[in-house]
Image (cartoon, rainbow, N blue to C red; front, side, top):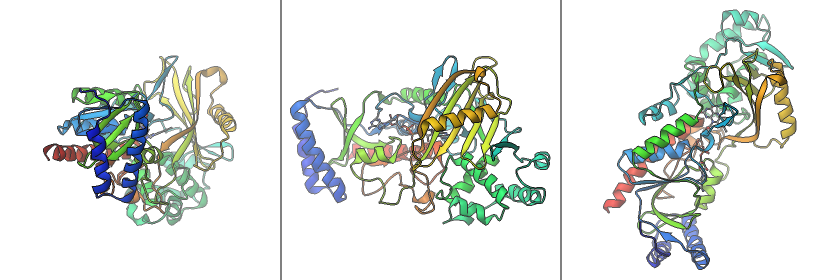
Length: 475
Ligand SMILES: Cc1cc2nc3c(=O)[nH]c(=O)nc-3n(C[C@H](O)[C@H](O)[C@H](O)COP(=O)(O)OP(=O)(O)OC[C@H]3O[C@@H](n4cnc5c(N)ncnc54)[C@H](O)[C@@H]3O)c2cc1C
């Protein structure tokens, strides 16, 4: 690989792009600023220009890995640049023999991610479904049976005897509802349309929160909410043996097999278009790269920082979904394996068993509070409340071998909201006003939520980037 000081040719080409580039004004302003900062930084540090790649993927989380593998499989010469280690939010940590997924992780069996991963040779079938047969709903500080069939409906105290037939009838109809009926509505408005008694509506809202991780059901898009609820109530989810790190490891292996060059601990600092249709990418280690770029940096804010321009028009991006997570490694499974908050946005689930995440006989339980983006930071209070919820599920302090608290995790970069046009209103993978840059992540593109959105947008970005890279290589 040729290593030379910052090439005059590259700078001249960039300056000429400022004059001739047909893209939008913001991109041009960005380029002028980038060229001048590059000239300044040149004075103090050496920049190395590398050979052009077909595709440069920025970010090595699930989305970046899927995009890189997809592009490489289509024949592209791919470089993946990751600021830290591979995996992003899908990384897992081993602590005293327990595997912690950095908060709960459930792969939707019939979501978009499973076929994308399977197509790349990644196994998603190792693990099991959560045991919700003994699920409890937390309301008014008390645990109640959650109705899931005739017997639990008879026993539940979550709804009154008079309301039970209506709740049973509406719940049975949910899998067959046409989600498009709720276009333009928020999740709360969609639930109102189902004309449930208040207690039934609260239960449904809790299930929407459970399946989407959205505390902001008053903003969440109704179509996305009902679709996700249907996925959750029909084919459901799987907790993976060994945690989501197995997905990361399989994808990383596949990337190597496909010839993807992976550069870890290297942050990308800036992107700018060049006159020849490529995007120039400057890294923290002083490398200057060129190719078609896939930006898979996790959040809209990180993508905006790289592009130097907002990834969506003002007011066209929903709020992030956030969560505070308490992870517990236990000597034995808890008495109550599953709790959903009905009048509070909380969750508790035993991930091991069914998944293999703990030493023989032990258990891993995730306890969580769903946060809104405008929630004040009350981490000590939230941690105590989550410990109290664990105690309600029968977990005694002596059962806990290992505990970790993650105060504020970004679950989804931006939720699809009714006000921002739902799933179709999310930023697209490809946008003609930013030529050469494709986006991927759980806030991008029209398909699915959570990792399903990340995988689906990444597969699209990988395919488009490979095709574009091949066109430029020929030109
Ligand atoms: C608590 C929690 C629970 C969740 N539960 C579920 C669930 O049950 N089901 C589900 O489907 N999904 C779930 N998710 C969401 C899922 O984990 C994410 O959608 C998915 O992992 C996102 O992958 P990504 O690659 O888009 O982003 P990330 O994993 O965030 O990866 C982005 C990567 O880009 C790198 N990066 C950023 N900026 C730069 C830069 N300038 N240069 C180089 N590298 C950079 C970062 O270091 C990171 O590695 C959950 C998330 C959380 C936090």
